[in-house]
Image 1 (cartoon, rainbow, N blue to C red):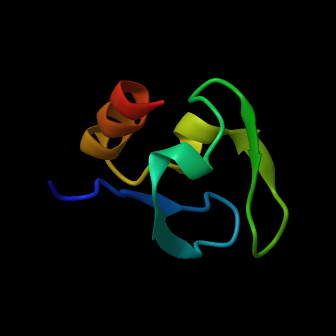
Image 2 (cartoon, rainbow, N blue to C red):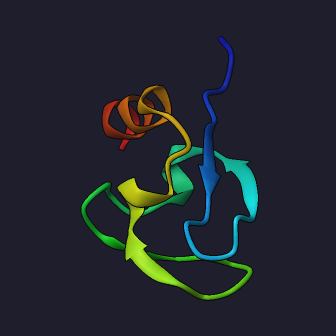
Length: 59
């Protein structure tokens, strides 16, 4: 079985990265960019709708 990752992009500094959904808070909880420390809901960091669906399914 393949591990699922989600792709993220910071709306403030545009840093992009990917991680496993279990390493993130829920989609409506606050998350901090590891680069600039901007704080927003985790869902706002998801690169695509597919990434958001994956996060919601696996969290």
